[in-house]
Length: 92
Image 1 (spheres, rainbow, N blue to C red):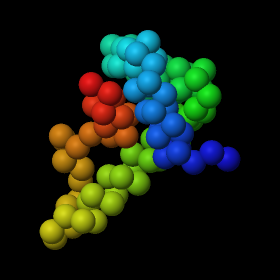
Image 2 (cartoon, rainbow, N blue to C red):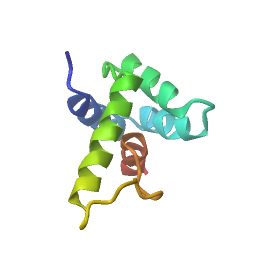
Image 3 (cartoon, rainbow, N blue to C red):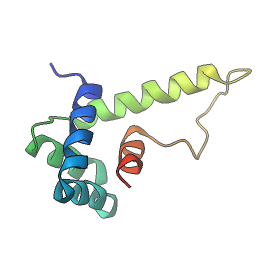
């Protein structure tokens, strides 16, 4: 099984080298189902990313951020980005 972090890293490198792929990934922000389209495009480019894995990664990231807060926050802060959003921001 491929590690999602490895796949996201590989996809990022490909997108930074291929302007068309980069545009396609950025355009997923406007899709009806952004994460679904993102995962489909990633798979088409040899980086299979399952939407469930992406959601689990989000939960893990938020959990780690919550634990690192002074006093232990009990809910995610609204402005915290998820893995998909952070990936797209890295392409802009």
